[in-house]
Length: 187
Image (cartoon, rainbow, N blue to C red):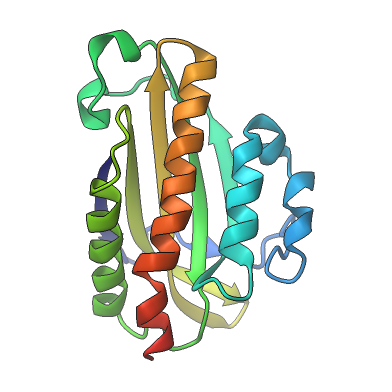
């Protein structure tokens, strides 16, 4: 699987907002993941959100979305030409599971680098993950760091693109729990 990270902390950069009007707290009620419209578009996303929001998880989520990209670069997905007809993408905003998990950008960078190494070891083609470190508002007056994970997959049909994205999401959830958890527990 292709994987990379970047950091966007400028004052005009997008932020993760955990107190937006439609927020469903899956950390408190992970079973509500099945109620989200995004999980009806991509059922595997529900399972991933449940895993990422369990109390044992090193992160919790605040927002997600699923869409069909109008354009994508098959080379960035390590996709053979025949697999590059349709694409499906999603993002998941992840927030730290404990208040000292990402005390500074360097800690978030270290977790993203470890996560990318694990993801690149996954033998899944035609997909990629891009991690973006951002400022996050966990409450109106509580600012921290968060990570937006963008996952994209392609295939020769819409169904196969969705199946590839499901594989990528499962590998992503596994990798998050393995890559980030040690840093979260050593803080």
